[in-house]
Image 1 (cartoon, helix red, strand yellow):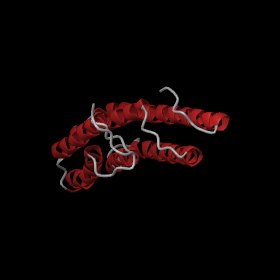
Image 2: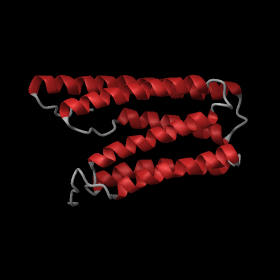
Image 3: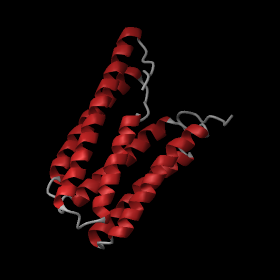
Image 4: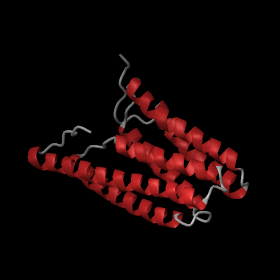
Length: 195
């Protein structure tokens, strides 16, 4: 049975991996925007995705789930996604609309999360639908990065899939946060509801 770290621990392998993902963002932007090295930029994105997949598994398997990690992981996700969308905005006509949706969704989810934190005093982990949305967006953006001459119709379809994933995740998080708040009001505490 792995030893469980304190919820307030900072220096854990998953947290370091989240910081590495954030550090990869400037490298990706330099490769894609300045060097037009699309293959290398896609490779950096793939590395970021692998670390994102591994950090949660490591945290659970080795008892390294912490409140810091619950904050760092989604921040790394959102910064990566924002960098991808912004970097593609000048190349694909539907990206600005996706950027607006992304900004609206993240603003609303962050506001709802702040209310939940203030009411319950608990930092909750990312849910599966948030991780699915991250995967869909990063995989779709990866295709657009790796194949810059993809047909406009294909690009529009990929962007539409990303928009659906973002909207769906945002709706699911709203329902989840509402359930947490209702549980807190009923009991004075907020036990985590089932996913």
